[in-house]
Image (cartoon, rainbow, N blue to C red; front, side, top):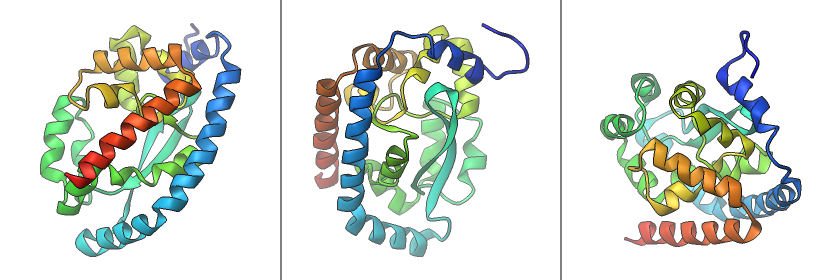
Length: 218
């Protein structure tokens, strides 16, 4: 690994390029991402417009949350979601991570935001990130650059998340939920990276869809 002034994300991204060749399956998954994200964007439009209006009326601007995340190969991109927190919450919560972040966030969530988070409808705009190629429908959840640096120091295998695009959903979320430790989440992420296939991708999407529907109609 080279030294110098490169960030950890940049240095680890070089390691990510040295992993075994999975170009065929990655091409198949990317094709599915494009087709399905375009379909989901179209289908969710009648729901996304009222959500945007309700967000604007209930708590003002901005309607969307935009945050920097580490993507495939260490490239940083802007992830978009419907805003669920009070304006300015990002600055107040920026130094938290893991369980402390979850706890601190509770007091910042708006009334509409609680419903959006429970149903995961706040993530509708991320279909655009998938269509653009920043994300995949299935993969490790995207993480902020500063937290990536910290976790890569703490968990030596964390750089392997850079091998694939971050996902709108993933093994860790489907299997255990948000209370899982970072080490446990990483274990699930590495399992996806090692075993990723079209069959596993579709099965994860199906499980996620059932889970979301249950949350919407609870």
